[in-house]
Length: 431
Length: 146
View 1 (cartoon, helix red, strand yellow):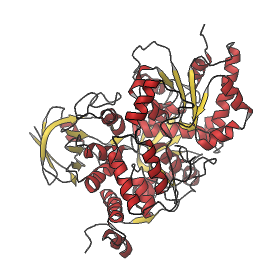
View 2 (cartoon, one colour):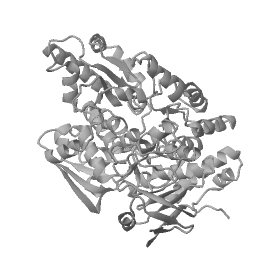
View 3 (cartoon, chains in turn orange, brown):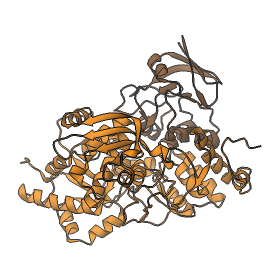
View 4 (cartoon, helix red, strand yellow):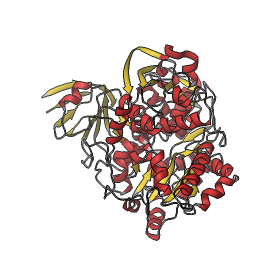
């Protein structure tokens, strides 16, 4: 008799018993035990086989990760559908570092980067351009369909895939993302089920203007934590079609809900696929209510601690693009920056600025005249993970500014709205 | 002295000093600095969580509603358990979240960690326990505060 409560097929039981080797048995045991904690009755097939992994960085101290990867490779195990992975932590060409920072990055922090990337390639990394947190964008092509079951991690990618694409994925952790991709099954619970996708919060947006996506997401994430919100009042500002602007807005909004809380799925009334199809039938009868007005957004913003040593200091480095920018966002920033610089009588940015996008989006953008304009301003374009960059303790001496609530949450960077960032970068008011 | 009964995720019998997070604990933000710096003792690193910010967590009984934040969370728990700088027990007032659950399973299956974990202890538990309290956890998921 099986030691597991879950209903498993004869084939799955055989794998657990070692029919495909000890390592595969451990992988499946991990997936099954994880599912049993949530009462999963069975495993369901992963229908979009291309995975997405959250762990892209070879931090020397993550020895358990490297050891496990070696064990997979020694056992000849790979993810049959391949996978993309979060962005690299380093890009010296476009995000220059001083010699001391380089020493810390190369010798201490990311000393295992080369080893880990070799491991990723051996286990199924799709290609050299596969390093991005926005793998779901069309340029990258790891884009699930509505209803697809995924084995992904990366909180911003999972919440986007669930909410905007209508795919089905729990907020998996690093390692579980890869394990599900290897075995081809995930436990059936939570956001994989119809019941788990019902909203337990009704959120009413009652602001007097389009709310900043990063602030709105932050407010909702802090309030609902891991629950599913159904959001009213946004289509007035971002429309009822998932066009480029709406997709970019929801990407940034979702990343904030997932990092300031633990949201894995949201529904936007009249816009996201399940809300369009099922409407208020998605809302649980006993749902809580949260009203967001201008004052509430201001309260949330005021709650962010400023971690710079001198609170009134000026920014020394700006990061735009956490999560990685879409093509239309990049074009928008390049145009707005060009206009703002001209308005302020400048040709170069006032603060060193790095825009980040996936390698494929960056390649598309490099083919446009806007790229030359952006680079001429002194800004740079990279596919780095800003969060991994700011892990270097030496970067804590810099006053880093960002429009990303996710980056603010995990670093000492200070949050500014898009408009404020544009003013800082374009030197508005500077001598 | 108050007693609570939860669901056993990883069984064990331990006692120690409580460190309490009253809001969701951001695993990456809490542990990453100490892990990156190779510290032998974790000090809470999340500036947004004053309950545990700069508090010692290693060897303590970590009491929390759930974890939040990055999906590296499970791997981070696995890593601190492998480095033996983990809290000896995770006590969740609510149902454990998917990231923490991954971390506990990874620690058990891949690191042979003896980390103890109990969830569903209820809101009363988190109301009752304070940082610095002595907490005992029994094999059957019984938790005694004080």
